Length: 372
Image (cartoon, rainbow, N blue to C red):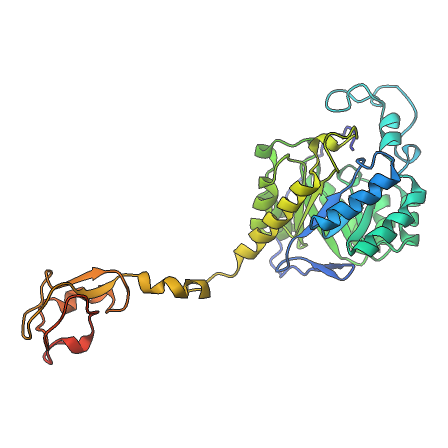
């Protein structure tokens, strides 16, 4: 869920950071360069204020391969006013005509559910954390020993909230939808004033959904270089491609909205992944990370069985001892058990040291002694 942002302020880019970027640790799980991407299933409002559904979502997305499930912790009164004046009614998009107060009431997660959800996540071996939207939400999550705090894109300008979350001494994940460089600078400064310094930035485009050609995932390595922290993606596109591309560019985390079914009448279902789709995303992102590997110009173990199928020099006809070898006698063909093709010019014009037979791989000792 979201509301209408203020226009971004103009800003100058921050200087690039060249020092190595250290991983942060969330509930014992390292999140950073060199580690598989941290995959976050964002429940958002798709619980539909049904505790059974919320618990089922934890079960389903733990099974689908999520590293973490993320909640949102707010009430309509901590988010907005019960008012229909200008700016308090949504214009356009999925929620056109509805008041902010009504939307946040429908999307809010009852606070007395949180303990049960944390218990279920622990039982399923999946990390659970939340995005608080005011200091009272931070306090609730602190009482539950939340392992991290997410600052949503629209709250990135709320530096008192960032300071309150950072003061808990746990890692912070900051989304950057709508943000200018100055917004990010101020948010990081607030986090570092009071927190542990363990911060992850998530590149985000806050379109619901975001057209894939506006995802701009090339921003992710720029964020990491500029701010010296691990960077990932909060993805609102409809498919998997943006997330996989982000991981290929070095994203350390990917967050996707999820639902048990897009047929459910919940606020965010239309742009959320179902469990089977999230499982595909998880596998694709982990495969993309594994495929990055390390820069190398040497053969890999998987190539050993096919190495014999490279070209090499072979005798292609019966050749009598003393024959001057020409193109009709020796060629570069497969398989690869003979001399390398680069030696062909040195072999041609030399005399055969013995009778040579069709199909023999060329070796140096098959040439007369006066040859090289």
